[in-house]
Image 1 (cartoon, rainbow over the protein chains, first blue to last red):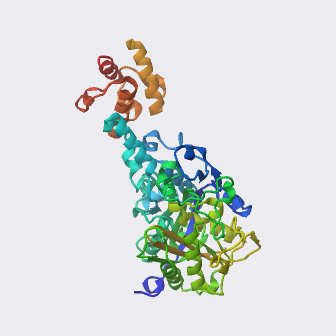
Image 2 (tube, rainbow over the protein chains, first blue to last red):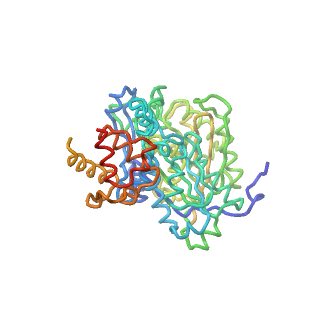
Image 3 (cartoon, helix red, strand yellow):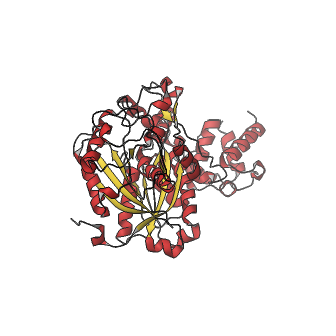
Length: 417
Length: 79
């Protein structure tokens, strides 16, 4: 196995555009303010209780209005997660200075994380059962129902001509999409790739997740429910939306005169080869170590860790053990932004890169919301319960782990003009 | 339902669903061209007619329905 990316190719991979549609806001500026102010995007949804949910907690976000923006003929192909991804991608492409003319004449790729489109599946199955007539399902159902719905929609809408693929890796999907995209660019196979992650936010998409008792029951106080690393955590809160990160070779970015925001230094990954829902320590630890090794940086250079921590008992504990095993006493501040957003699942790996970049650019670390007291393992981390101001850091590490034991770790470095 | 009433309702639901002005839906106008339908969105029109009027346009009959007048006649005679 090659030990360092430089052995493969010296090409640098930079981030030139970002866009987001989340419960913390629908623009980078709004999201930055929400992070700074420690705003929670979590609410109680009584509809879920009527549907028999154990927990009615969810993130709340705006629905995009695409009528008049995207033709009806194409809108029918777009489930909600594709709509979120469209909005995030419009902003990211604008920031990167990529227009339709450029994308029609260059092989811009697309790697987006997504791992469900349950709402469309449920609705079409309901129609088939009721009407006994497949033609009543409508022309959009097949395209909305497929797991690759986000990439098939974005590829057509933005005229993308490079690689076009959905990355399905549970709650690490968005992170793996960026990591895999970075590898394709390093290897010289692509110059520019639209990466990201999308997550539907509707009861059907997470009803079965609720059914295994994974969600917080702290319904009386929704904003206190998602509490990563806190000893009183009792489960995650589902959220979602979409986040788009345009990555590009340094040469391509310079040639286009694109803004160079940050650099993707390294990508680590591993598989636990263990239990389907219960994470272990060794898999995440290997992912962290691989990211450091591939980046060619030392742990002392990492100024901030954006943890995967979802506010579940075992998950947070085992991630804390993995981080401690790698960083030991050289522990930078560690937070999980999921205290504010809930768990954005397929989207999380991409959105948390954006959250971390916004904090890095604005020299603060948002509070690990609702962290009051650690347990035996999480207390070994350096977890700020309050916002850290005037904190200058130029490199962070972002963890994303998923069901089935898939792990992804990204290391991102600031690029300052 | 009288035919005039059926046509009025048809024009309203087609204009709303396919986002065209009701005025462009004229009896002799071509359905696909007027509402910018391709083979996929034609399926949506078939479903809409079934849902609203209880008339299923059979697949072999579809090529014979070119204008709105063809559609009105097909639906009205089967209601």
